[in-house]
Length: 103
Image (cartoon, rainbow, N blue to C red; front, side, top):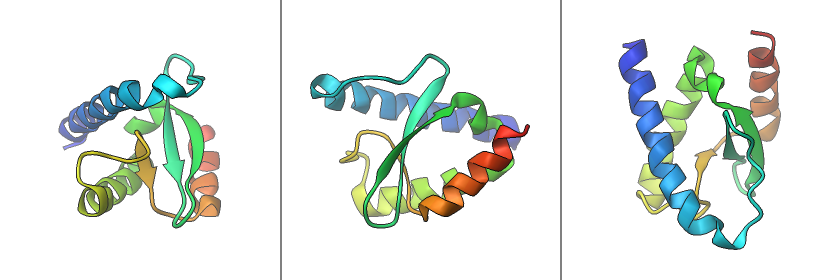
């Protein structure tokens, strides 16, 4: 299940990357190699840059699954932010990334 899910997560990220290339023409692109931009927030979205290695972590995968499902229902595949969106509180996301940073 882990490798299959990781493979599908990478496909999702690549799809969003194509959208990002379309949406980023007017934006300064500051995502270093090996990282991806995500948007976090329940109402107002804040941009975070996280290591791609987080995609391998079960906690991040669980949050990603929930958020992708919710984003598809809310936005479909034409995502207005041009990237992955986590519809959760920033504090919770910060706690999760602090835990993942220790791995």
